[in-house]
Image (cartoon, rainbow, N blue to C red):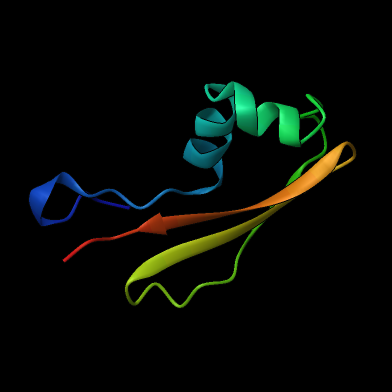
Length: 68
């Protein structure tokens, strides 16, 4: 997705996975097992993007605030 005004860029599956890999606390929440994770966007994208991340070692929900 292209960057919006102010430089906001919505995460996608690839960029979200990179963010998780770069954030030790998120990796730990997934049991440090990133192979085989699934990412599902569940928000409507109106003000936030919400993703459910499920893997063999755990799961988490990530909310990305778009800002206005």
